[in-house]
Image 1: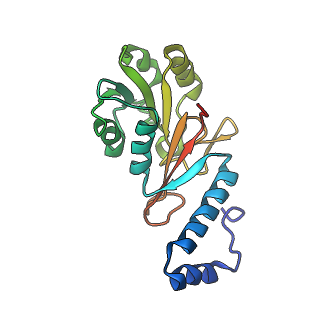
Image 2 (image 1 turned 90 degrees about the vertical axis):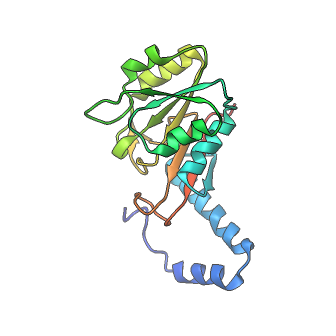
Image 3 (image 1 turned 45 degrees about the horizontal axis):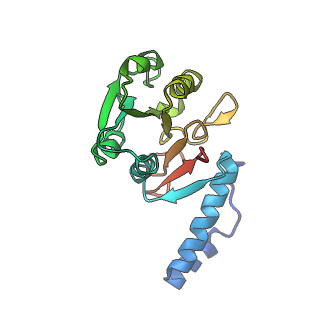
Length: 195
């Protein structure tokens, strides 16, 4: 992390600027700078900060137009925010077993879970280990489904030379106190599918 997170010597003056102005201008200025930095460092052209990864997951479901009759396939082992984002739209969570070695969605069980109501596949990169995105994208393409990538656990990790968070049509991030990059509480969303 030393190359990514070295001190510039300006941190204290930046904090003082935000605290002394007491308005949202300075906060927006530094939020935009943080978005630009994260976007450039992780090859995410359309990245935006949010209040939490939970918020980002909810925005992802709104963005794909999730409706009450829709279904979303997701791993049976995940943080409750994944299911909550779907349930808040009145849609149905379809849980698929995870692989014991990675705790990631078992891609061999996705096809059997797909119905005419399936709208998306929600993946989770558990402990910075990537899902089998080649297989998942092939399934999603065949059934015209969105891939929503929960990358709360995968900051700065790569798979096949690409950063995790670049594999979903929409990807979500967490910056809470337990994550690789932390701001106490916070999140991000990347729109990787221009459509």
